[in-house]
Image 1 (cartoon, rainbow, N blue to C red):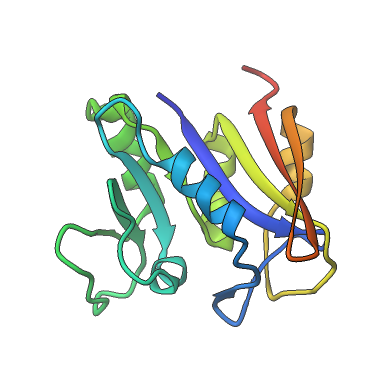
Image 2: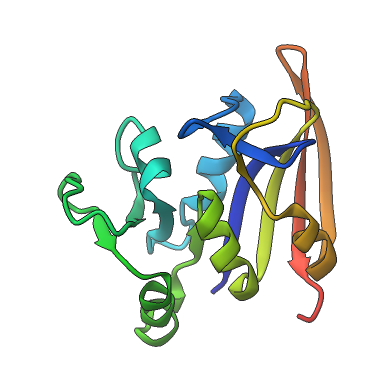
Length: 171
């Protein structure tokens, strides 16, 4: 299947501030769920850093939740997998027969940077707002290495945003 990145960013490429998401847009959250849940009966893998995982109210349903952290004391609910190395997760995904599932990279900042060279597709919610956060997404690299294949414009509660899908230029 494919390795995908999914992120909500704004005009300053911010994704968060003080360990929290900057935006909670209902239509974006619905898109996240629709994209990351599988339609082939095999649950997709959602890989996220510790802070991204802690931002959730509970593990993502109908998906395999994998948390990447070096925190050996992190306590997670039953069924959530904790790993300490992106390379280990990637190697397992590529060589274990897990290719009937998509691997979704859900954040945060360092994980996005590590995963970008290995990703096939990037799904961006681009929010037209210029708040500056302390966590950022490598959007310039996406625009260099990927081609835009789809764009939709929306507005929710006075906030304008776009869903933009990219695919790797080199196939």
